[in-house]
Image 1 (cartoon, one colour):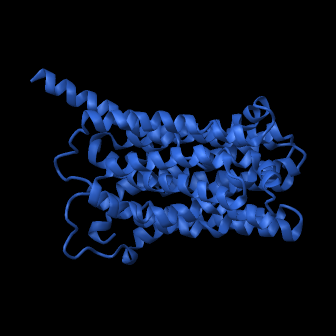
Image 2 (image 1 turned 45 degrees about the vertical axis):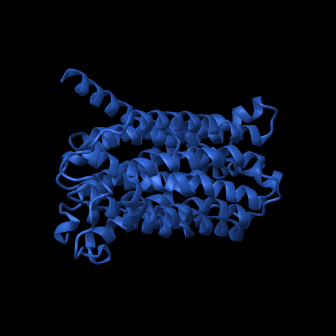
Image 3 (image 1 turned 90 degrees about the vertical axis):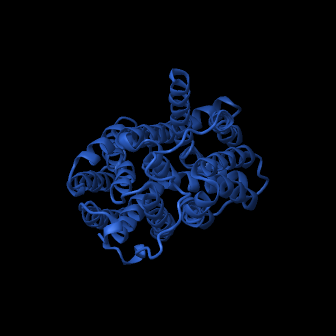
Length: 404
């Protein structure tokens, strides 16, 4: 009996490693682009409106492709779909730097983002089904890896591009390598055999309830969707525009990339701690409120002294950005089974990312119309206040299966 037990334990560790490596690749496609956006625009002849569209493409792809993830998981299994998503990330990141024009660049970006979208939705399902007694720990681990990948891409993309001849293309191409490693780990995992999920329910494969309560009628699900959408808006505006905000304030390009890395890097330690804290709290609303207040203080600092206090505002915005791992933990807490988590994750993430699409576009349009960043910062502050309200409502205890 010892050998099968050791095999199962080894397969579980391999699955956990594959999840963490996948999470590491869920943001470099976006955060690695922000510090080089000005160079990419010049190289491809991209206008300001198209650049604003480029910063909105992630949310749009996450909304469109993320909505298909639960159906694909029911048909093929969540593990297989996450592995296929990792393959799409790898291919998109490998092809994007060779794009000859904006249209091809957008298409390759969309391919990578499609893979990211299904992984976004299904990672909480895998955690619920395969690690039900370690939800906080596993959510923290893969959230920490996600934050590490986000911060790493933001910090080193510009220096890498400079060391590789000063061209933006090698600077983006290098991020295909971590995706190749994650894909190789999935290949080994699938070849050795995926361990069985928790015996209570097989995630993504069980029949749908005969009369499921539509999530659009659940106040908790709607609040979760709004909360997820607003924190996504803040995140993609940060990844797409924050380096430019600092550069326009007189901060050098390399330093702007490092400031974005600080913002994203705050999630490395906090993304491990906060989900574990969230699952222990009976109500996650106070935690959401504290994170939102940090965001409001960061936007106020950018308004008053963007260059002089840049490092302080980066830390505050980084703390605020940890609403994302808290939101992932809350999705797992608001449903009883992996199937319920899959439904809620698909509903909240698809709807939330759809709500986030106009945000980066609006920020770009406001900046272009006013010639400054004051109006965009006012918009972001108003959205942060609304995020606090929605997050406090979504943080109330209750399960969507019970009509919460």
